[in-house]
Length: 319
Image (tube, rainbow, N blue to C red; front, top):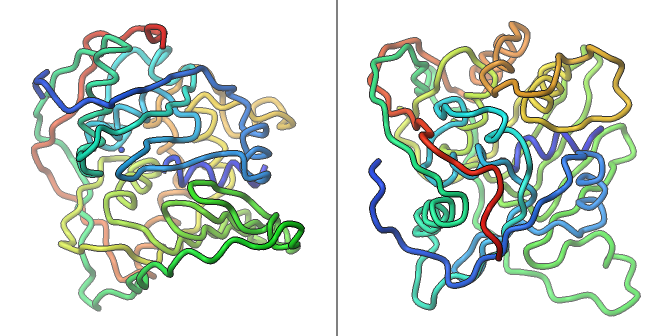
């Protein structure tokens, strides 16, 4: 079960149809929707999460997740056929063209989705009720993440630390012996999760950009979140989320969570991510977490661009 709470924060963690940069080579294959199997692979260091100037490799992701990454919008601002967008998960392993930049990867994912899944979208601009994320009057309380340390030298064969330290581009999950877990090797730095006596999961992430924080917050509140903090860089972030809300979100995203009694955490199937944002306890905990970080969710109205999926194939063309 612990793997699910980490995965929900990684994997997520990300218009006109114009010509965009493309991957040099890309393979797409179907992945299991069993969250427990994925968590076991993560714990064993078998899962890769690599987004750099040479490779694009991510853990199993839904089409909705890939569209969110490609067009840089929160999940709840994407509309289309839920049975396709929230259905099968896909693993992508791609090579970037020589001389390309990391910042071009979202555009390359746009091209990949159009070429392999026949994705066609349009933007729909409407004035909507939103939460503006702003710095609170008392000032910012969260700390900026320190610079990345140089990669450690490889351990000698047989060194017991081999099983503790993920290799380049790998993630693994280790139990902490206290009922929680820690994930290392994530793009968000170390991610620590621990249960609390009041039915919450306390999460600490050591390297979170504001774009990722906005994505996460939007999954648990009842309206889109817009970043108005003007904060750049990465930050150390702690959130408290009810376990029931995390299970709701996982099932809304189509994850198979074995071992839970019927009806616990809501149903699965074709529910969209917005359905997971109806838990008052989750909203209260998010507002409190923002207060602890020196941030505030301020209700406002603002024009927003939503992504509307006009056409998408259920399966990609062959590799």
